[in-house]
Image 1 (cartoon, rainbow, N blue to C red):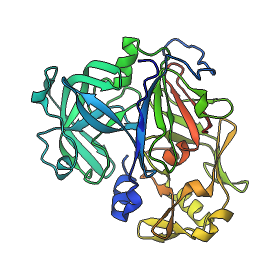
Image 2: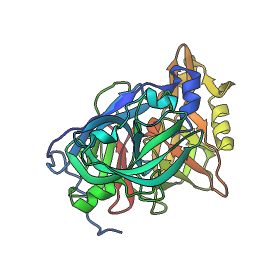
Image 3: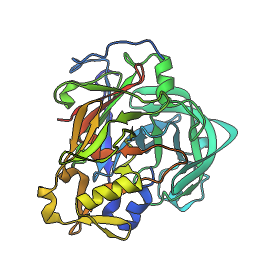
Image 4: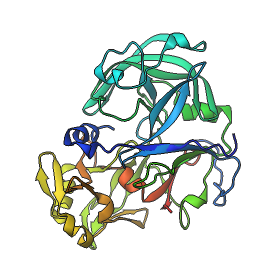
Length: 367
């Protein structure tokens, strides 16, 4: 188990076509301890490689069943459940992805529990099952997960299913998340996981479990408490450009979400930023002058008193002669305060540690 590397794959950007992108922009107390800052060669860390698909998705392989059936899944801090397509799914998207075959696994156990899950404009319906799930050499026996029977809107995604790393809550399956089951087994020396997401290259991204390797970041980790135990939301002080606060004027919330490619916020603040960078609408997209990117100021997220700048090269994306803004509107929820989603645009710049033991997130500039 020591030194095992399980990479995250980075998959094709949905901006390859406007249709693909408009689909997936909507997708998406235990005992305290002191997390080691010197874990460079810590043999207790388990590494899992991720493949970067054109700065849109970071995807890793898992195996389910006995003998194992391999799937490519999105490792997602914005959700808690695990699901993959069932061989019995008749939706068009299921024919484009790997499906689980229950009768081929000797450790499979079915239930009659049905679930429905919506991710904004996409959704799935399926049933709860149990089987052995492997993330590299990490093994969760009798792990509950979902098998989809109907999928809506997943035809063009570059992954088979989703593996949630959020807190336990009513999830896609309503069952205990895999990270929690592995914690209960005592396989981690520390109840943490961390992401390093590469930029513009397929390999090199990684999710690590059980500790932190400081070779992946510069300086020291800055710790931010979660704003409410139960999800990976934190408090943001303000969002500014050129010293002027352009959003989050009275403070706001942000979800650090490895399952979202972009920076998403309420319509008003996002529109203000688009105007600030002279982005013009084209359909559901906003484009900026490619020649102006070098002169545009960074957008600065101030979190727990520390500035986290996102330069224009990161909050824009060049494709087919156009330069798109990576700021998108997040559909509002009833009675919700100003809330942002800091996706891969932010997380490529900042190495992130998700600390379940102390209910906090650590951030530091990525190498």
